[in-house]
Amino acid sequence: MLIHSPAKINLFLKIVRRRPDGYHELASLFQTINLFDKLYFELSDADRFTCTDATLPTDGSNLVLKALSLFRHKTKIDFHVNVHLEKHIPHQAGLGGGSSNAASTLWALNQLNGCPATTDELCTWAAEIGSDVPFFLSEGTAYCTGRGEQVENLPKLPHSALWIVKPPKGLSTPEVYRTLNLSELIERDHQQTLDRFFRGHFECFNDLEGAAFKVMPQLAVLKSELMNFGPTLMCGSGSSFFCLSQHKPVLDQKANIYPAKFINRVSHSWYSEI
Ligand code: C5P
Image 1: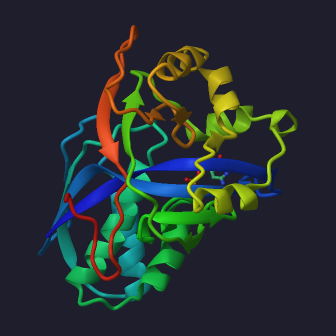
Image 2: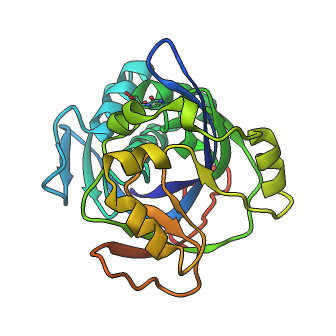
């Protein structure tokens, strides 16, 4: 079974408060894009996990294997599986690649085992793996609150062409959150921002940008270069950006640039390349 595991961007990301458990309460409009990892699953007589990217761990710390052991624990089904991950989504980029792989794994294992769990159950389990994992079980456009794990499916937005721009260095999500100074954030009514999106007025912002720019000051330079091509915003906790431009940005500094567009899935089927 081949499963496409999509990346995401945050069209807006509001940090509401720091919680006593160390997490941050957020309000964010998440959108999947057609930048995919590919995951291959095959039932087998022993577990085996391989990955095209030698820099990623293939032990129990990989979110694919966390999802596998969680699924087995929750369903009590005795099975083994071969999994191969073909990595294309850059990591430490704020694109949710690892979280997407975990959600895709839960979906695939559920299919391979005759669908013992509902999507709602998969979502609840997904939150145990990471804050962004439940979003990837939505239909691609969702308003996420709590630490990100409270997911409200929303109608599709008009398809938009964009470029994902990833500088050579990545950013650590915990480090960006640690650097965040909440008193420096601009007051905004995120409910109003959300309503305006669905009336065609895109008002993109990301409260984590300032903190990421403190950790990696050259990101501010990259953003201002990209703004010459079109509206640009950092993805999640960085270090990549999305740039809404018809033309591929031409940059002075080194960065990988990927064409992308919004993508949604229909309920009961998974994301596909088309
Ligand atoms: O939930 P997840 O394991 O993906 O989060 C990784 C880290 O990102 C957390 O340990 C925390 O430092 C930070 N985080 C946060 N608030 C969130 C989500 C993540 O502070 N809502």
